[in-house]
Image 1 (cartoon, rainbow, N blue to C red):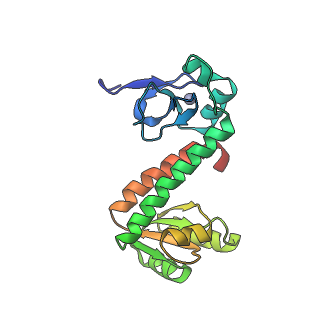
Image 2: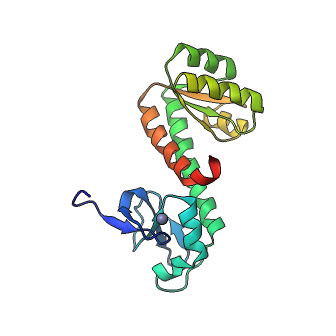
Length: 197
Ligand SMILES: [Zn+2]
């Protein structure tokens, strides 16, 4: 392992990993456990793997109070999972709206499909509430064209992020946003790994 990269261990599985690849939690003054996705909040942190399974195990086994050496609040698995999901989604949403402001978004089924076939799409977002066969159609074309796609947000939410009405699909064209959004997507996927695949 490279020297100088801080290592921390997971409250649940005890594996030691690069600090940056783990989920950090700090304790607020009122003793509430707060997920610190950007790893910037002050105070001593405790860590779990960036995985729902480790987070759940740590919460169920009361590892947060052990880690913080005292009583803690809000450390239920469901509560922490909801907060982390929201924060991960917020980051993806804000990148999407930035990409939109930069003119790097194509939306609407016909336009996206055409551009997807022609080439030049880097990432594809498919709304959670579109019909199964349309979703499948987009997924198979994306796979054929080697474009990563993610089923996330409702049509209303997806449209809202780019200042539009309902949108079934939103695509990010090849640009710097594809890299940053791709990383956030991977994080989200890894976190839910066991449940999603
Ligand atoms: Zn772990």
